[in-house]
Length: 475
Image (cartoon, rainbow, N blue to C red; front, side, top):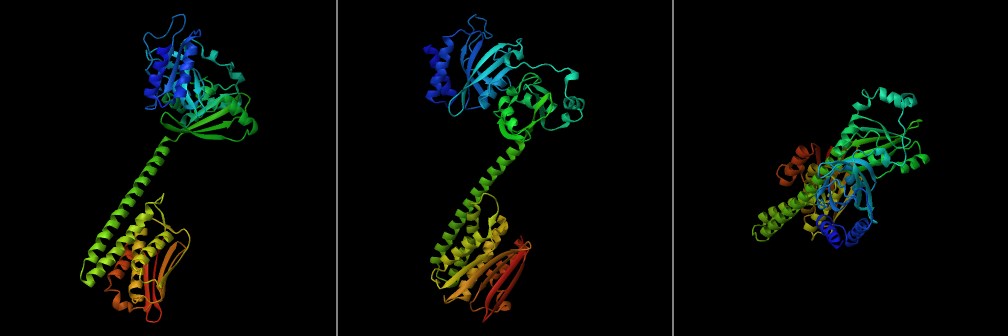
């Protein structure tokens, strides 16, 4: 027995992440089988942590010596396509009764599979195997009766009559069970689904508990429907790498009891996972772009400090502001779950960056007003960030050149599908016609409003009324 326990422990350590307590429990179960009389081949299988397969860790041969196996099978794999009941019970925790399996030595047997559980879930299964000639109905506590044509309900008769033309055309699997829990009606898609899950025989006549994929058993479903008969029950389940939506319906007929619809949502789940993966990758890209732009801004600052020409120093500092405006947007995009960014967040971040650039102009205040939740895509967000940065920079530099007292107001509103952003100051103003064509900053603003936002720009300025810049675009 010591050798058996060591073999179980070694195989569990190699193929699973079971705890010492779980492994000890399996060795105790094996010891109880060794001390008991058994008439069938008995196995303990565990779920491999490295693949969609089970591993045999224990085999007890029948006492009469009539085993179905000629060679040792400990350490062998139990694959879903050969032993569907084993994998099903390991995943769902529901006993599988009388399902056909193909053994490692290519023999057809019927398996009854019981789960072994701890407080967290299934850790292993015990398998009893019999020759395939045994009658599957002997494994059920409730004996179903075969329906004669005259005993069938009107619904079942109608469904059978139109079976080929209706339910076999559906993309979903349809299964209908009688009041004892046995499958009485199915379509071709149901056969295809269960073949994919490894079932080796026709599922017609099998019990609900042998076909359940979502950890429900027939008795529990009946209890639920006894309290809420008209309420459909829908669950999502992952089996063998595929995702299914399971919907159960109560059928108010004398002979029929429960209808089950299986909808394969694997492609949808994979698309969702792909979107999440791409979203994470895009956010990481935005984060790296932001870091690179901040590095560029730091290099430009160093160059500006080492520059003797005031004009060159000013150009370099202007470039720093523009680079940081773009970097600020990428910083926001790197923290957003989706590709939409709140315009108010962008404006606040740009204003904060500009205030740091003009730290000596503390007498100038920026006031921000905006409609809540004006969310825009990343391309237009970058454009707006650069536009607002240019306008704020110009106000600081020209409207309040001596850092005198003043106020800059940024207002963003959404009305009728149009976004209007107004940047206004109460500074000295300037002659629009004379300056706008010569200013690089205003040229950038005009270009971005026209080409990036497909919008309209309006500039008003004068000696006594300050400057107001308005740009409007479709959301």
